[in-house]
Length: 159
Image (tube, rainbow, N blue to C red; front, side, top):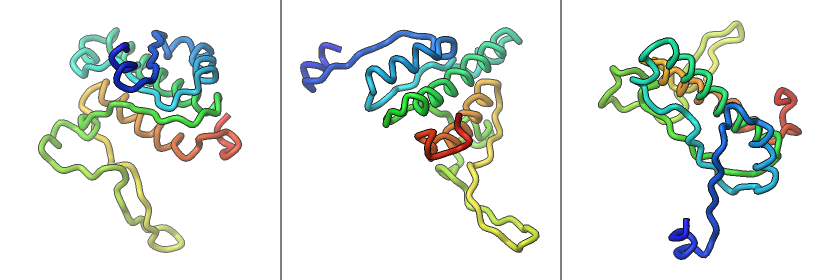
């Protein structure tokens, strides 16, 4: 952190907390410090670990989903304007996609409805190969849901 300060003239701080367990502390920190960016590394990070036994599977799901959801809820609740950096993985699309070019973001589709053919965009369909990759696929849905909803006042569904 001292090197960053020497190079940039700015302070960088680190707060160790279990964001899957201490939501109130997370909201308090965001409200107090109003970070310009949050680097979210609060997830169990290994597909093989997530498949060792039911203990590791449960830990991966509980930790990863709750941690990511808590970070997003805390951003909304604190009302801060921030950038969220989060690591994803191509594994959400399945192991058969190695070397395949998967479109970034949304996939344009057409759907036949009672009112006629409609064009929509959906997240590229996931095909996770592990419990870890399932949690990362759910992260995509959390981000798609919360991204346009930065403040509660803008969306009646976020409470």
